[in-house]
Length: 233
Length: 233
DNA sequence: CTGATGCTATGGTCTGACCATACTGTGGTC
DNA sequence: GACCACAGTATGGTCAGACCATAGCATCAG
Image 1 (cartoon, rainbow over the protein chains, first blue to last red):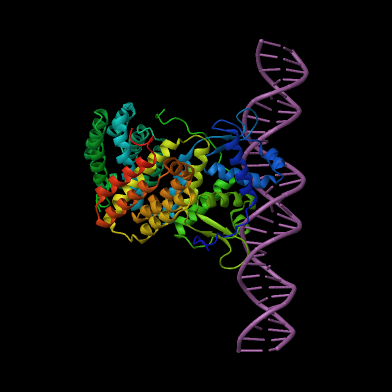
Image 2 (cartoon, each protein chain N blue to C red; image 1 turned 45 degrees about the vertical axis):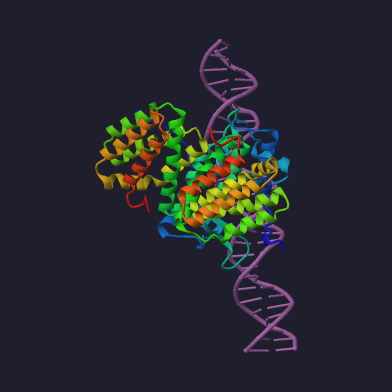
């Protein structure tokens, strides 16, 4: 007994074997996004398994945002390696929120953490802020809470992307997608969005001036305004 | 043109339909972890699709850590709703790291962000620190870099769990699993682990004293020591 | 050269079968 | 009554083979 206990002896299923082999091929051959995987029938024959097992493995890879399957024929057809972790993260969060295994509180706290970090980082990297400005203008024009939230999401995702960290940006998009319902509710509850817009402009200014502390503070105040009952503990 | 552009008209595949219906059932019936889904054959008949399509949907749900399938018969057999986002996140990060669509730098930066937040939060909640202390003791006893990293991972995951946010904790575990290789390399490169242990004790002390600023600073210094070439900028 | 048409490789779906597994009920034995 | 051996059965796991829709490609008529 080493103290780690016993691992459940889960006999590896065929599709898991396929997954492992595909992952090994990716690592060994240095495959990246854009490269093609063998066709399902071909892969099944090469690995000595049925096409069903290959398909189940493909479904997993597709769920994880690693491959994309296209029917038909030609260079774009078949299973192509891609790099789209966003949808996978979004599905993950949405389903676990639905299962009540994650509380909105936890997701919103996580968002606050990410956005504080991203804002500070964006202020340091001096990004292109035209997307941010355009999103603010879009919110000014918005005629409904839903439309406002649409551009609001664009603003905050652009802020995360401006941090230069794709993992953070992907996480931000997923969080926003999962929380869309709560965001609309928050806007409706507030009624007046001028305060939110003041915050947005303050965030933009801080990023433009390259002031990370000011950016962090602006984001914190902004989220406290949007979710008054959840921030601050 | 409304500016949103065209969505690709992707004809929904059968298994996606199954997914949507299962998710709807989960939401409408308020199913949570522990509840059972109908058997594959039964679900296929109810939805008027083949078992293959149901199986592909199940594979997706399993990948996302939402269901767990058990063979055999009885109350524990069949597809049971679970809540295990950890494995899904780990697979996601590992595969995208392997695809070179995420740089180690981005993952490590994310880890720093999470851990600073978690440490501060843990200091505020006054958690049970026995796990943290035990992990430090384990590192003292460690005879190899791998063993050291094992307990180091336990320490940092326990810290994340002490924050009380399960999403953050799950993310931390996934990040650590994905970065295990880099962690071992870092320990080997350092050679002497006494500095790391000093940091660990400092973090533990800050949490015990309920000093979030001190905890954040200690974590920052610790990671700067572990990844000297990646932190700072 | 151009356009129409059939060919073909691809993923998507379905059917039906068989296997290993693990609980359930039955019946016999002590 | 308690216990154990064994057949029954519902479950997921796997396979083979078929058919369909799609979309690029090759061929051929004009």
